[in-house]
Image 1 (tube, helix red, strand yellow):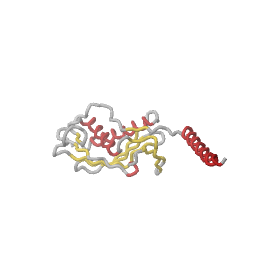
Image 2: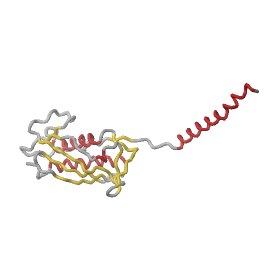
Image 3: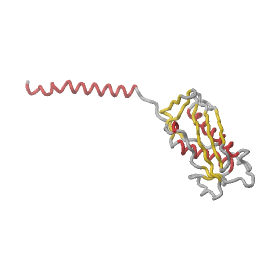
Image 4: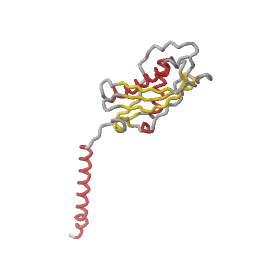
Length: 201
């Protein structure tokens, strides 16, 4: 009988380990979290460039600055005036400041044509020496719980005074895709405001 005692002593520990593994597998099966989805801001719809007056400067878009609350990869949802909720399963696939700069550059190209808009990574060469620097600071860029997107920003083109604008676009169907499209649409509205009078020479 003495040669069986080690086996008998190990049996409770073995059964305990099996029970723990079974519980872990059961919890994993019952507690499955939704899969994350990753987004980039889409380019604006193609449109005929606006007529550009003679003497209108080329634009060199500098990197857009975002507030600290937008440095997280999760999409921000604003509830009321001061509460921000982050959607952990809805994430940006690129740094949002890079995405906003890219999408705004594409929106400006849609307004003015690629011969007038320059930024790093746009693929149209270096900006001419007389290009006007465009500085953009985003103050707010988020969605409401119903998907409505709001962009608040200030900008300066060349030596013109700083301008301020607030733009809102409802989400078409209220889902994540619609919320992202609405955010991109606010950037198109910002681009239109940047090149609109009285900034046109």
